[in-house]
Length: 505
Image 1: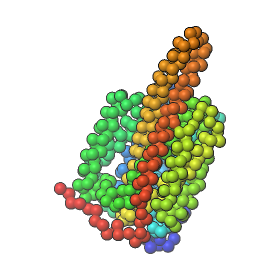
Image 2 (image 1 turned 30 degrees about the vertical axis):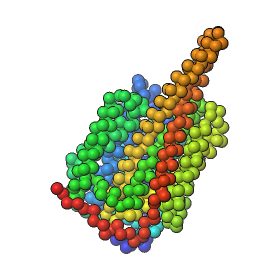
Image 3 (image 1 turned 60 degrees about the vertical axis):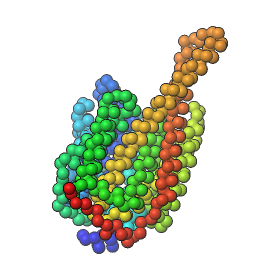
């Protein structure tokens, strides 16, 4: 099937197959978040930092392999690439679904991540190759539905399954969908993208592994271990140094692992900056809201997941609509409206109290996610539209890598803000309580002391959560300023004629 045919009739059947594969891969990304305490107890794991590797390890493998996805998409036919990736993912899912011990479960998660890391870049590149630029907004909006909905419903689904079934069911229920997606891929998938011989630079792969792996690991464990832990600042420092070397090396290569010279395209560079801020704000919200709902309000995991479900549904259902609006009106107006709504709702969450109503919590979170649904896909699509077709694999690889790293960094920073603020507030409240007790002249009973301590900790954590939401709101204001400079990329962009190549030394 050539490019002209694709423009006339996009391969909807093939895209549906890729959507199923991507959905189960994305769903698996957040499926274990609520289940970790149950797995820890069932497999007799002594500390939470060990079981946390089921989530951290998955993210690390994905983050390390995503930069190489540009090479895979450029070098291999999309049919073969999907079959291999889905086969690897299915094998990992079977390993995890029938794991007798923690070692097998962790290995299964790593294998899953290796297969899933290619799904998003592959699906996005097929869609970019299959739709003309004037119709990409609607197509990418459907992609956003999958990208947002799957991980968003993960915690709710996980809470229900862990409450009523064995945790292995989390993986076992995915196996039929993964197998069906693989079989349909073998049967129906066609090659719609051009491939060419490219060289894989091993040193670039190693540098990207150290860079993105170190940064992701350091920031993802900072909230748990603290910034003073040598493993935290050591891995971040190693990652930053490797990243600098990696960037300099890519800029001097004729065939880099990641074509960083695409940042010469102003709309792509601007979209990347906005995406970083929105990703940091979005992922931090997914950490802060459960912290408030579960740790302060004492709401059970499944019920907490249900409270966040309307936000996920609003974001997912709006994504296709936003895509069509993007095709009609362009990115700037959508980004400005969406970011304004997001900022207002985030400021609303700074007003949380110990007894805030369920309606207020769900409403603010849902409105916030609704606003974000108007930003992510339009901004990303507009940036990719400025790239020539041959650069799409690099553009999608960079976008996915940037979002992964930004999400980890944003979550870690917000958790740090929350913890530090909570500690200082707790010390302030303890001092105030002691002063009041001294003035009263009578020492409180043991029960009264315990009640006071619990109340102090709740108030301190609440102050930490609201303070972090204030930081997130300020970040979205910065994104609004950047969105003012956004312009719609013309259909017949001059980007295709721009020469990105730079001679090697």
